[in-house]
Amino acid sequence: MDSNGNNFVNFAEFKKAIFDFRMSNEFTEPQLLAMFNSFDRNRDGKLSAEEFLSQLRGEMNDYRRDLVERVFIILDKSATGYVAI
Image (cartoon, rainbow, N blue to C red; front, top):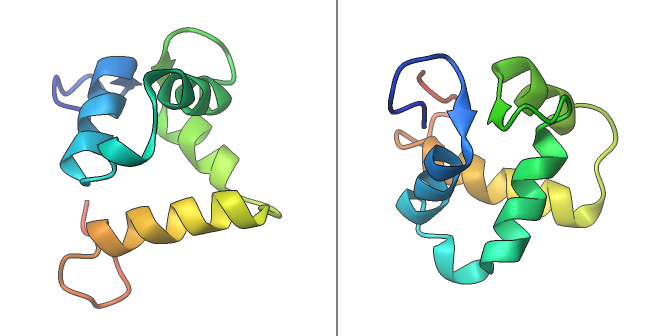
């Protein structure tokens, strides 16, 4: 997702990742922005790994759990239960 290698993900990179994961038709632009903003806790317009992970930790509602599971399945290309970074 971090196409420019700066260790952060901006909205364009986030949107591209959603497109690459073939989930782009499931979300509108405002929904994608809302999703991105929910991860961007310090509102600096970019996601750090810590911001991303902090939103995935803890109790998740059914919508968030389903989203994480769908993304994980796509990222787990070898179907091992692990994602290579």
